[in-house]
Every structure is written in C-alpha cells, then in structure tokens.
Length: 476
Image 1 (tube, rainbow, N blue to C red):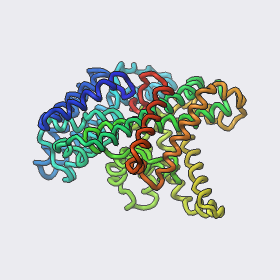
Image 2 (cartoon, rainbow, N blue to C red):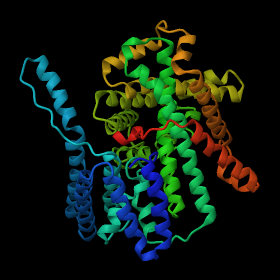
Image 3 (cartoon, one colour):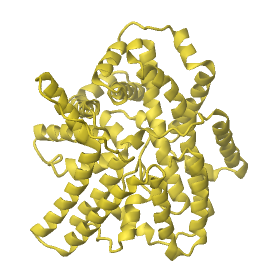
Image 4 (cartoon, rainbow, N blue to C red):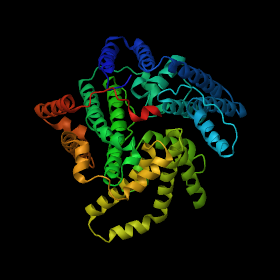
C-alpha cells in the first residue's frame, strides 16, 4: 500500500481510530495485523519472506543472550547469514548472474539463465533493521525481546516498513509497551507533518518526475540544457519523494504516539559532502557507520586505511541501493568525494575564504556540493552505464534544445507550479536553519496555523499529480 493512494486514505484513519478506542493491551496486536495488511497489499508472498527472517532473528537473539563465548558469535553469524542470504537471493542473484553472463559472452562461453524471482518491496530496509536488532543484542545494548509477535511488530511497523527510517531496537521496542493516550497537540503535529510530506510527494516530486522521465527514458535524444535541467529536477525529485515518504511515515507514527528517528535535515544546504551524508538518509548513514565503518577500524587506524574504509562503506552503500553497477559507481563516487574532500578541506576553505563574505561563502559551498551530488545522481537515475556516460557528456555539450523549447517541454503550467512550490519549500528550509517550524506554528494564533494548513491542503487538491506513483526508494 502506498501512502499517496485512496486505500491509505481509508486505512490510516480507520487504524488510528481503532488504536485509540481499543484498550492498551490490544493495541499492539492491531498494529501488527494492520502492518501485515499494509505489506500484503503489494503482494501476499512478501509476508512469507518477512516471516522467515523474523523467526530466525527472534531465536538467534534469544540464543545470543543466554549463551557465552563462541556460541554467542555463531548465533549472530547465523542471523547475519540468513538476512544477507535473503538479500543475495532475492535482490542480487540476477545481478551476479548477469555480470557473469557478460564476462562469459565476451569469452564465447555459454551463459546462465536469469532467475524469474520476486523482489519484495523495501527488502533492504527491513533486512537492515532486523540485523541491527541481533547486533545490538550481541553488544549487550538491548535485551532480547521475549514476545515473538512484538518483535515482529518492530520489523513490520507500517509507517516505516518499506522505506525507513531504519530504526534501532532501543529506540522503538519499548514504545510498543507504553500506553499512548490521545494528545491533541501531538495528533495535530503528526497530521501537519503528513500534510507536508504529501505536498512534497504529489505536488513537487511527481511533477518533477514528468520531465525527468522524458529525458532519462530517452537519453540519447538529448544533450545540453535538457540534460542539465532534468538532472537538477531529479535531485529535487528524489529528495521530495524520499523525505516526503519519511514525513508521512513519521507523522502517522506521531499521531499514535510513536517517535521515529529523523531521516533528513535539509541536505542541499550542506557545505561539504560529509555534511551532506550527515543530513541525507541519516538512518542508513548511521547504520553503515556503526555496523561497518567503526568495526573496520573507523578513525582509529592509519590515514590510508581510514580512506580505504570510507571507500568500502560507500561502495557497499551503493550496492545496498540497487543491484546494478550504476549504483556501485554512484556509491564509490561518493566515497571518492569524501576522501578528496578530507584531503583538500583546508585548501578549499582558504580559497573560498578569500571572498570574505560569509553568506556568499556558504552559498558557494552549497552550490559545489549540489553540483557534485547531481553528477552522482546521473548514475543513480540512468538505467545503464552507457546511458550515464552519454548524459554526463551531454551536460557539458552543446544543447539539443533552446531555452524556449525546454520551457515548452516542461509546460508553462507545470513550470509555474514547480517554481512556486519548490520556492516555498526552500523558504521553509531556509527558515529552519536556526529555528523549528513546528515550534513557530505552535506560537502562532489559531487562524494563522489553520490558514497555513488549508493553504497546503488546497495546494495538494489543486496541483497534485493524481496517480498511485510508488516512492522511488520502494525499489530498494
């Protein structure tokens, strides 16, 4: 079930009303059943894969907690193998076979048949969340959950099941035991966040997608300005799409009294690539930091080894996003960005610091970050490596279309809607640099608050792209 669908428009208020009407001891059962329905709405078969990993990780955690020495380690290894094995089979099997086939074809050998296999939506998200549970139990930071079904709810909680944030057990499991009473201010705060997320998804992201698809679905027909505009559009599309999903999910959870971790923090205002990754997909960045980068040695090793660790982490991050060499290149590119950024950080500050205008210096840093991130988005969005290279070349080539032709391709109506909606969003982000918009709303008179809500709501009604378009990160 997608958030921007009629089904969810019925599902969310019904589940929320039942949640508050039911006695506390039955509420978590409702959430578990609702989460199963939410996921099964895509395909019932998806539940079977989840059930397998849930059972394995549940018993592995109990085994870890009651064992000592190598037995604990083996229990963790079995859990990790089961989870990574599920990813390997359902997500990466055809990628591995396809890569092998490309090599075999060049050698003139027989190739393998690709598997006709189902890729469950959000597989990488709930797999990583499940792995964080057994790792945290192994580290002694959280006790093993004794109730199998409550642990299942930790993995399957519908607001963040298919596209994160990737939670940690110590942050959410205890919340399933707490009684959440109806709180008007909290409900309004959650609904406001959901409204904002829906605005970003259906007004901005889905409208940007129209032009992006025109260019990226036919990459060899364009060069110059259309490629530049579509790449910039995709940068905002993926942000509004993914952060919009997160806002809707966090808002839905907040309405019922649950606090999930923040996943985005105005990433395009970053002044370096490392800052970008502290602001973009925060739950994934922190997951790789805590469970891959630090165990590899983190910053406690030699400089060369530290840079090697960074590169490996971001290459794996790229592979996490998708079973394609384009994603591996995208992740590796960000690893290179980070390494070069650390090596040249002082030099960059000295050169840009010659301007002696703090605001302009920040703007230049933010522009450079957006430029290099956008180069990476080309690999992320293009389907094949050959298309990526053609599009990159096209960015720096003479334009196949004039400004007037590109404007016509976008359409005057869509262009004006995007101009005002993206401008409005970035104005909100600019205000957030030192203040909380939520706190600002709470300080305003009732008429100001509700006028703002109605304005956003009417904007969604009038300017939304009406389709059950799935969120980009569902494929991961």
